[in-house]
Structures are given as C-alpha cells and as structure tokens.
Image (cartoon, rainbow, N blue to C red):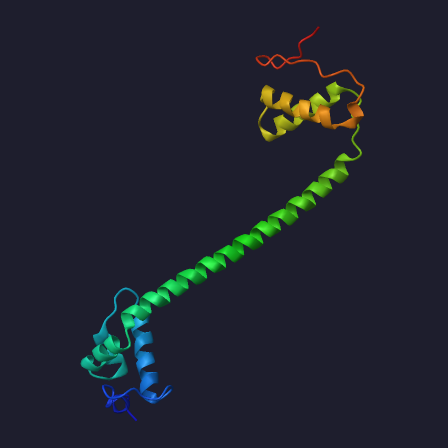
Length: 172
C-alpha cells in the first residue's frame, strides 16, 4: 500500500489514536522536526509521498510550530536538569576527595611536633614558598592563627614581631 493511499481522508474527521493516518502524521512531524532550522513542508511531502497541501493542512491542524517550540523547551529543561545532576555529582565527588585529602594530611601531620615558635614560622614560610606566595602579612596572619590554635605552643614565648617590609624578625 502506498503512503498516499493512507492519507486520502486526511482532511476528514480525526482517526482513532494509533491509526495509520495518525502514525503517518506523526512520521511527517518527526521528519519536519528533524530538518533543524530549515523546515520545509515541501521536503516532508516529497519524503512521505503526499501532496504538499496535505502536509500544510497537517502542519496547521496539528500545530507543528507550537509542538516544536514545546519540544525545544522540554529539551532545554532536560539539559538543565542533566547539568544540575552532573554538577551535584561533581560537587559531591569534590567533597569526598577533599575529605579524603584532609584525613590523609591530618594523619601525616599528626606526628609533627614543633619545638619552638620559630619552627612553626619556618614551616609556614616554606609552605608559602612552595605555593608561590610569600606575603609577609599572610604569613603573620597564618602564624597568629596557628599560635592561638596549637596547644603545643602554650606557655612558649610569643612569636617575635616581623617587619612587613623586610620580612625579618624584629629583635628586642
């Protein structure tokens, strides 16, 4: 049976869902939608094997333009949902990795004991040199925070002040 024979009554009353005519209309719509930005009813008519006016009627009756807009909106919504899911999983993986690294660092650092505040200063200065920043103000802020948090340093003499211009300890 030719495709044209299935469409003779296309302008008549709607066929029952799943009929050959409705399947043909849906196939025509899918071909139309697959054309991208260069939609052509004439090309669809040629591929389906029906008259151009029949495709034009289907397009109007079935609101192909509106269906394409809705389909595109739905696809955009799905992309957003997919991207949010990917982002959520990536953040979760980053948190898991960070926790793992912090735990490893904690295990590694748990054996380190500083004898003097100067040892702490040298350790922090070396850290900043490794990461490429040896800002004296940052080092002092870090040291002051460490000094207030590290119980091993309680009772030791406070860290000597540092000249911000030279980065050297200020003596007495």
